[in-house]
Figure 1 (cartoon, one colour):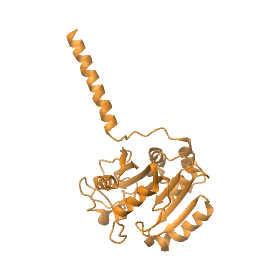
Figure 2 (figure 1 turned 180 degrees about the vertical axis):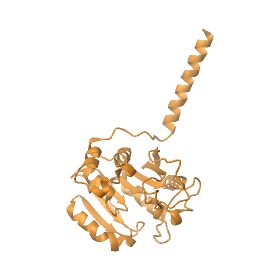
Figure 3 (figure 1 turned 90 degrees about the vertical axis):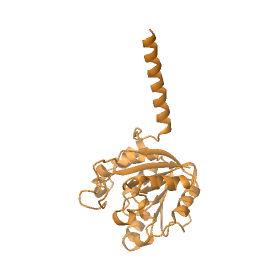
Figure 4 (figure 1 turned 30 degrees about the vertical axis):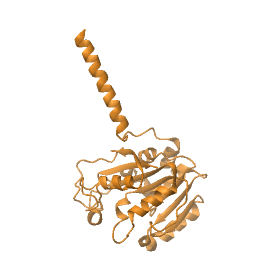
Amino acid sequence: MLARRTAICAAFAMLIAGAALAQATPGAKVPPIPANVRAAVDDPTRPEKDRQRDAGRKPDQVFALAGIKTGDKVIEIGSFGQYDTNIIVRAIGAKGHVWMYDLPYQRAKQEEPTKAFNEAHKNTEYQIGKFDELTYPKDVNLVVIDMYYHDLALPSNGVDMTKFNKLMFDALKKGGRVLIVDHNAEAGSGRRDTQKIHRIGPEAIEQEMKDAGFKEVVNSTIFANPGDDKTKMVFAPGERGATDRSLFVFQK
């Protein structure tokens, strides 16, 4: 009887410890895919070139984790190519709105295609400028920075990340979220490899967002690839769509 009671107590203690760990650790489990996200990703009018990239980008899981909802107001940082934008505009619907932003170096290649996209989607706006100098909308629900956070502070772009992250914090409504997906560098390397191979230490993202006042609510492993060689450029053969990546959601 004593042995049985001891075993039950031990099992109960393990259950309590597990529950505490689950509460303390940002969730990596993907929630059920909401209807608005499923319809947006599966929309047959999305460009075929985008649909071919879905296996490596997992947009249904990404936007489910981000919590995007119909009617949301969304800022997209680095909208060039409109891979994410094509999903966002469908997921938020006609009552939602997305503000698309690109850095000045994208002007020559992306300004005209993005303006055409803007004209075809009435719930979008587009602006080019230095991200730490722009005026952003208020009461935004979601900011999306997909595989681009590492680029912002490069010398050629010169974005002051402290100022930029504060601007994002101020643009969001209370409870608003920032989705960041990025290519992992070696743990602890910070921004050492951002310019050379376009990777960033995930701890650098976490610290910078924490310093801006955000709370980390999701740290997902859906893009984990333990076999990824983190000394390789993310555009090297075999790397595109297969890099080891972090997915964070931070909340105001």
